[in-house]
Structures are given as structure tokens and as C-alpha cells.
Amino acid sequence: MILVMGGAGYIGSHTVKHLIENGYEVVVADNLSMGHREAVTTPHFEIADLADKDSLDRVFKKYKIDSVIHFAAFIAVGESVENPAKYYRNNVIGTINLLDVMLANNVKNIVFSSTAAVFGNPEYTPIDEAHKTSPINPYGWTKLMIEKIFADYHTAYGLNYIALRYFNASGCSTDGTIGESHNPETHLIPLVLKAIKGDRENIKVFGTDYDTPDGTCIRDYIHVEDLALAHRLAIENISKFSGTINLGTSTGTSVKEIINIAEKITGRPCPTVFESRRAGDPAILCADNKKAGEILGWHPTHTMEDIIKTAWNWELNKKY
Ligand code: UFG
Image: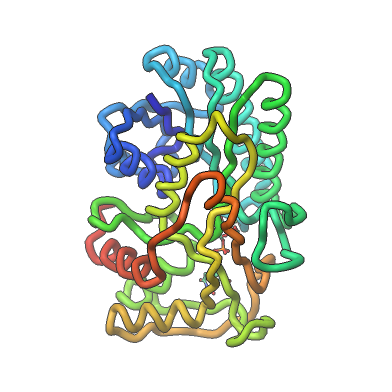
């Protein structure tokens, strides 16, 4: 059985759904501080908290767990700057707690949610795994520290790990049953769609003077169902490889392009306001995804259009 920590969250819940559809038995553990009970599609659900090792140990004693996929983390970059203690305590110490309990129960396989934020301001693009890591906020540091802890545990304790560095996770399930629901929402695509729907006044474009063709930031948006597939492939390959893998499409899309595509797909205008740059945003973040292809056989299939269509469908028919 696979334990999915944080399986009630955005990427976790899509991964759980994908694993079940592919015949895996899954138990979700989540403290529901950010996640949604309705997003959990396995019957095996446990309330557990990374800060409470006993609650974790109970899960490992109740189920026969072979591998863990670990999503449980705080993810807001701005908040991590204002309240780093919350991020280091939950993300880093919480993961050490999880590793303690895993090793005590002789579970040695973990797939982990890492992030392109470990790179900081990129020196070249597309970004491969050999690119220097130099986070520019505490959130990125928590993820990089955990990657280092895994590497040391691999050497010392034989931990098998794959840290998946997501670029911009986006989109919702194709069948419309689960989707993205952050509170507060900070991500571009749901905010654009909320502005189009009329749930917010407008979308603020952060910066139009970047060194990009249209002056707005370029990101590599990757559909959450492609990410879910990568987690299954990581579980299936974990005894052969331990290390980090970038997950993106290798194609960049600018903020203005996102707004244009969203207007086309919804057939409605997006009220847009142009503002100055947001602190800490690099001009371009784009993944080199060759390693994911070579090691996992992972090749994303969803287009930018799929991302906006599924996100729009969710925005119109949200269940949570
Ligand atoms: N943006 C706007 N207006 C908004 C929100 C975003 O113009 O209201 C712009 C941002 O400036 C950026 C792009 O849209 O250029 C995407 O922004 P998001 O906030 O959606 O995503 P980020 O690229 O900032 O962050 C994502 C993840 C983080 C992760 C980071 C780096 O959400 O968890 O990628 O990997 F740290």
C-alpha cells in the first residue's frame, strides 16, 4: 500500500486519484489544515500531523505501507518570507519526523514534492537538474534542505528517494471531479479565471518590463494530471534511482499569453490591470525535462489549452 501524506491537497489528491485508477491501494494521511476531505478518493483516510509522530506511527501500524509520497507542506512563497519559522518547522522538521517514523517501521521508499523554487534566479534556461541551486525565499530553502537530508539518509540508511521539482502545477482533473482550491488563492491561472467569471474585480499583471518578448514573466505550466503520472512512475522506478528530477513541459507561456488563451477558451474578456513587479519573480522559469523522460519514461501530454479548459470547468462547477 502507498501512503500519501497530504493527499487531500491539490497535487496530492490528483495523484491519489491516478494511483487508484491504475490499481494501487492508497491510504491518505492529512491534517486537513489546507486540504479538503472531499478531494480524497480512497476509502482509507487518516487524520495525521507531521508535528505529531504518534499520529504518523499509528498510520504505519494500521496499514502495510511499502512506499510514501509526501506532499504535506506549506507552499506560499510570500508567507514564508514573513513567517519562516512556520515553514522550517512544518516543512523541514515535519519531514524529519516522517522519516524517523518511516525508518522505525522499515519503510525506505519516498517520493517527494520539490519545486523549481530551489533554483532561485536561473542562470540559464531551460533549467536542468545540474543547474546551481540557490533559493531566494525560505519556502525554496525548506525544499532544498529536505532534498539534502534525503541524500544523506540515502547514504547512511539506504533510503530510496525521488524529489520531483515541479515547475508551475496547474489545471484540474479532466473528469471535473476534483480540482484546485487554495485559500487564499495566489496562483495565476485560477485568479485569471475568477476575474473572467466575475468572482474578483480583475487580474493584476505583476510586471510588464521583463526581458521577455511581451514584457511579462514566462513560466512552464504543467498539468496536474501529468504530475500525478510522474509520481506513479517515480514509485515504480524508486529502487533503480535516487535523486532529483525536474517536471515541466519545457515550453514557456507568458502571463499575457495565459490571459489571451483564457479569454479565447471562455469566450469572455478578462478585466486586466497592469502593475509593477512582484518581489522575487524571475523573468523566465522553464524546465529541461530530458531526465524525467530518460529515468521515468515520463512525457507530459496535456497542452496549455487542456490546462485552461479543465481549470475553467472546475471554476464553473467547483465542489469544494
Ligand atoms: N502573476 C500575476 N498576477 C497574479 C499572480 C501571478 O501577474 O495575480 C504572475 C507572477 O508574477 C508569475 C506568474 O504569474 O510571473 C505565475 O505566478 P504564480 O504565483 O501562479 O506561480 P509562481 O511562478 O510564482 O510560483 C510557482 C509555485 C510556487 C513555486 C514557484 C517556483 O506556485 O510554489 O512556482 O517554482 F515556488
